Length: 133
Image: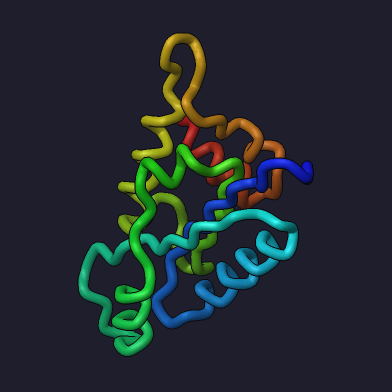
């Protein structure tokens, strides 16, 4: 990373009981250790969550949902989901719609570039496929 302006890393996650939140926090710590600025955002619940009520209530107080300004600010996005959730889940719908809208060319160029995710892990390819379709 260059010594000039720090990299901006957006960490977006969904968690009910806190396990994925811990992974998001670990990713954020790693980014900070690499001298990046971070924003940590939790995808909102689409319906009332009955399991892990105390953790969900705490996370609703501690995190805000990702917004367009966050995506435009970010140089990199880390996206974490629990194993039982995928990009077709209702929790992801609004966020993925936002990313798709920002990925559409404006004046010949996309506002955000999602193509690099297709060259990442299998999970990254799955998310990139969902976003680019």
